[in-house]
Structures are given as structure tokens and as C-alpha cells.
Image 1 (cartoon, chains in turn blue, yellow):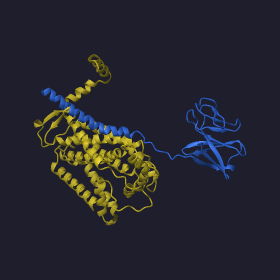
Image 2 (cartoon, helix red, strand yellow; image 1 turned 120 degrees about the vertical axis):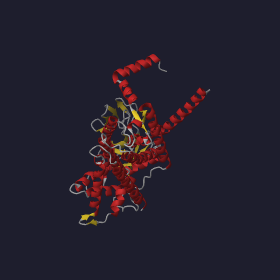
Image 3 (tube, rainbow over the protein chains, first blue to last red; image 1 turned 60 degrees about the vertical axis):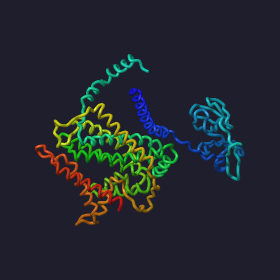
Image 4 (tube, rainbow over the protein chains, first blue to last red; image 1 turned 90 degrees about the horizontal axis):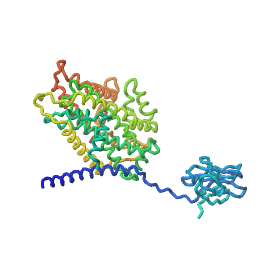
Length: 143
Length: 358
């Protein structure tokens, strides 16, 4: 009987001790997980003046917290795609000689619409809508 | 469940490589004296425990803290408002820092009043005082890191005090500030001191201090006859009691941190006036209030310089306690040392209270 009571007391003490230590360890573990920070969703950004970009040239512009690639295909036509390679997140660039978008990290090739031409990317680059408002080029997400 | 054979196998494997039986053998012979003042033996261990808490919570805070004037305050604000349990982790770090210094002071005064500094423990006394100095340097450097108004001006005052040291003062202040003024360079520097330089030196000195205490064994008060002192085994008797003391300290720390979360204050503004009621951490209050009382000029000298000189003399006197507190024949001057201890303790308590309330 005394043995049984002792076991109960030992369990209570042990359980209480473990719980109190856990009350310190648990917050420490939770603390290590970074909180999710909601980003202001960006749907449209100004990408500079029409005259800033020559024909058959591209430039990286900030689209929210991620880069986008704006390409001037002709005097009147612009294309814009996400500049984040769908393979491993590298930032792509426009190659004027081949009129293609190239990712230097693993030699991926896309056309100016973001379609995969060769290399390891599993998906095309997200395509954005481009409008010219006055003398300014505006990039926006497609509906 | 591990089979007994496998358990013995693992123990044997570890024994061959680590020689744990020698440590067990050593621990089984170590004893701790039991007398009316045994309770004071726990405070060194509690100080060590709180230091461990500081290291652990400091590592957690490093996951989010950013040491630049533009981001420091915001990153601490982010920790306390956005990160899960961030307020608690920061509060535990701040409370533990203060409790650690309090425990170190109690440990130091218990060593004085029990005359544990005497031969052959002079080096343990000196290394202990150096550790207390390092703990205060931790406090001073960590105080600036949230980059709030109070900490900014406290650092201005503190580094300005360093500048008034004769000959090397200006160079010392420049070294501390990383420039002529307290600014971004100071914050980066203090961060470096706080998380790299001071922990490195402290860890090394702590090992030395513990080894010295281990070498000399636990001291007993000189008025107790050596043959009449009982003792208990260090392991497991004292060890388990020490663990319970640590557990109690953890309880006090957790309660204080949860019930009285540490305030963040307002962000520092180098072009704003110092806020009313500004004062340093409690362990700097006594010198802070003393310097308030010293007149602008004492004879031909600047009052601040005289005050600092007084502190320096007091520090030297205190550091040399094991040497002036014992006669050539090895007898402890108990009355002198106890008197000096009471005087210093009274000064620290009285002036800290006046610094706090006035």
C-alpha cells in the first residue's frame, strides 16, 4: 500500500517537474518559428518611361518583393514576365542576340512569353500584362 | 526498453573512451561542509545557472535581432509583438540578467562575510571579481541593444565617464563608441562585445574560477572548529539540492518575466532631449548617485575625476581584500573585513535607493 502511494507521489512530482520544464521549453521552440509576415499584395507597378528601354532590350523591375523582367519587343510592343526562374528561384535575364530569356544558373531558356524552350524548369514564367499609359510603361497581374 | 546486456555494452564502450568511472570516483569522494551558513554555498551555482539561461535566451534573441540604428528598435519590437512568446523570451533575458548580477553580489558578500577569500583561495576571489566585472559589462553593453531613449542616453553618460579618465580617457571613450559620438558604430560595437567578446572571455574565466574552487574545496567559516563540521556527499546529496535551488530560481525568474514583462520604451532619437527621470540599471545606481553629489570642482580638480578616482581606489582596496584581510601569520582580520563588508554593503544599498527614489 505504502509502495503504491509512493509511486503515485513520484508520478505526481515527476509529472509536475516535467510539465514545468516543458512550460519553458515550449515557448523557446515556438519562438524559433518565424511569424508569417503578410506582404502587401501588388497588382500593378510602374516600370519606367517608354524611352528608357531600347527595342530588343530587357530590364529587371521590382514587382512587390520579387523581380519582374520587362522586354521591349518592338517600338510598340512590350512583354513582361516574372524574373524568378521556376527551376530554383534564380533571376533570369533577356538575351538580345537570341531574343530569348536565359537563366544563368542551370542554362534554362524561355521565350519572351515565359514559355519553357529548354532546360530544367518545370513550369513557364508567370506572364504579366503590359500597358503604356502616356509615356509610362505599367506592368500588372493578369486577371 | 534497452536489454540489460546491451546497456552494459554501451556503458562499457563509453567507459573505454571517456573514463567516466574516474569522474564517478572523484564525485563520490567530494563532500560539502554542513553548518549554519551552508545556504550561502548555493548562490555561486545560481549565478552560473542564470548565466546559462542568459546564453540560451540570448541565442534565441539572435534569431531576430538586427544591430543597426535603423532596425534595432524595430527588431526588438517585432520580437515582443509578433514572434510567438517573443515577449516572454526577451523578458526572461532581461530579468535573468538582473537576477544574475544580484546573485553574483550575494555570492560575493557571502564570500566576504564567511571569509572564504583567505589562503589558498585568493585567485578564486580575484577571478570571481573579474567575472562580476564582466557581468556588469554584459549589462552595460546589452542595455544599449534595444536602441531606446533611456539606453541611448545611459550609454552617452557611461562612455562620457570613461572619457574623463586621465590620459587614456579620450582614447578609451572613442574605442567604446567606435567614434566621437554614440551612434550606429557604437551599437555594432556593443553588439559585438555582448555576443562574442564578453561571452568568450567569460566562459574561459568561468572555467578557471570553477577549477580553482574545485581545487581548494569548499571553504568553512574560520570560527568553526574543523573537526566539528559535518559534511554531506556532493553527489548526489548536494547536487540534488543545488538542482532544486536552480529549479526554484527558474520559478522566480519565470514568474517575474511573465507577470512583469520588460518594457521596451521609446525609440532612441539622437536629436531629442534626454527624458526626465533617466537613470542607469540598478547596479550602477550607487556610483551614478555619488557622482550627482560630488561638486563640480574639488579643490583644483574636476568633481567627476575625483569621483572616478574614489571609485578606482575603492575597487583596488576591494580587489586586494585577501591580502590586507589576512595577517602574515595567516590569521583572518575578521573584524576589519566584516566592517569593510558592512560599510560597502550599506553604501551600495543606501546610495542605490537614493539614486532610485531621488
